[in-house]
Length: 151
Image 1 (cartoon, rainbow, N blue to C red):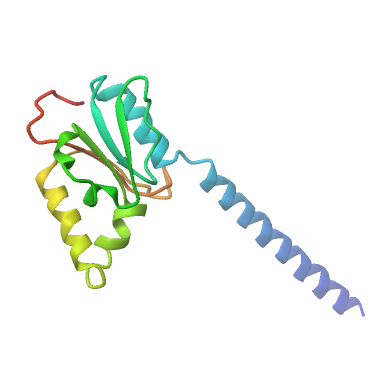
Image 2 (cartoon, rainbow, N blue to C red):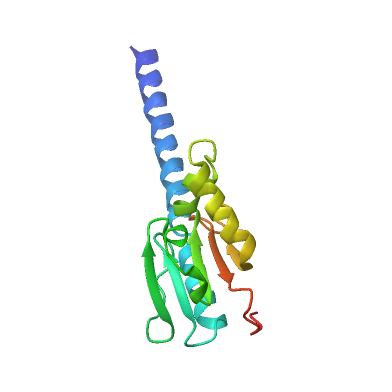
């Protein structure tokens, strides 16, 4: 009976420790800066006011008082006619990743994204590494004809 009690207390103690460790790890992850937030702050501080910005879903909210923002929706960068009218494109791996990562299943969409990514200048990338930040990869692209320097 004494051995059974020790084993039960030991198992409960171990289980409690495991739960505590999981809670600690989860709390650490959810308190890391999110890539959308990091991108939003950078955009506010670095893009010229009045810029025309096209943003897909899963990208940071953009200050409409500072910028001319158009929500192009799910996989909108490849569905929007005359995408060249925008100064900047904001893309999220939560949107483009489903096509680019599975080009064998979505060859047309993956090719369309690659064409846009090759044509536009990549200005900044925010990628969650799960140590210093979390979230999808956020990419900021500039229309190649634009000359303003962005930090």
